[in-house]
Image (cartoon, rainbow, N blue to C red):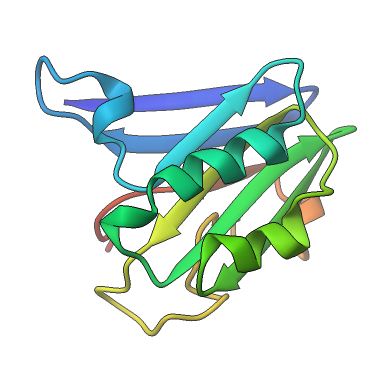
Length: 137
């Protein structure tokens, strides 16, 4: 089955899509995807969640956080600690994070998640950010 998580802050949206086996708990099977919606600082919680998923292996990581109606995205090739160095001060209390293992396309910031629509001039112009597992063709 597929589970979609979509949270909103004002008119901006952050979404995550993952696949879960029937009867499996959502948190235990989200292969490199983490999300947060609450009152605390999202960056701290997302980066902590991604760090806990490091054992699964990956080559890049990224986060998208909503703050004051704008999306802010940071991506890095390498370890979560390298992402944390550029993302830990991001404001906002709603966000998604992702670790990627390159099966298609080289490990790069361009290929790292979260993705925004190609029509957006920048991440802050995007109406949503997306993380996913598997290949979208």
